[in-house]
Image 1: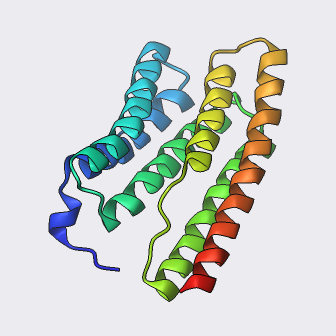
Image 2 (image 1 turned 60 degrees about the vertical axis):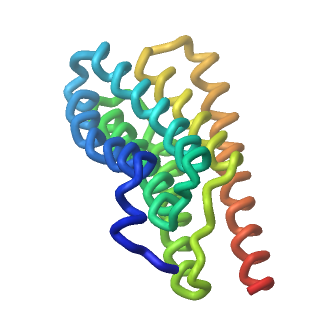
Length: 180
């Protein structure tokens, strides 16, 4: 795995870095339970930047090893900041936060192990992106105090996607290890 500074400074990677940089600000706003309009605007920016960074990397032929690391890492940092802010302000259940952060921690640890043993970074997949979308819906519903039925349904769907994405990631990792 070759990481160079030139591969770091692409438009798509800078979007991922920007997403990481606004995460602490998001945590502060949510944990203080203030300025909900700004929280929604930042969340929309994060979602659009997440869609845009991968698109830009592909169209500009700038898919880099840095991007394969930064994009999912930015997602994980941003989601963790929101979850912890919502935990602090009592807007999200601790069991769900443990599931989300536990999944992300497992994927990061497995990804580091895999990259060190294979010199290859597993790129994000649509399963991972769909899982992040379901997590995002839970976060938005909980933050907006949406009807309990919708919130509980989104918890169930998201939890199922989290489990599925873990299995999917593990199978991809083991399959790639066998091929290498």
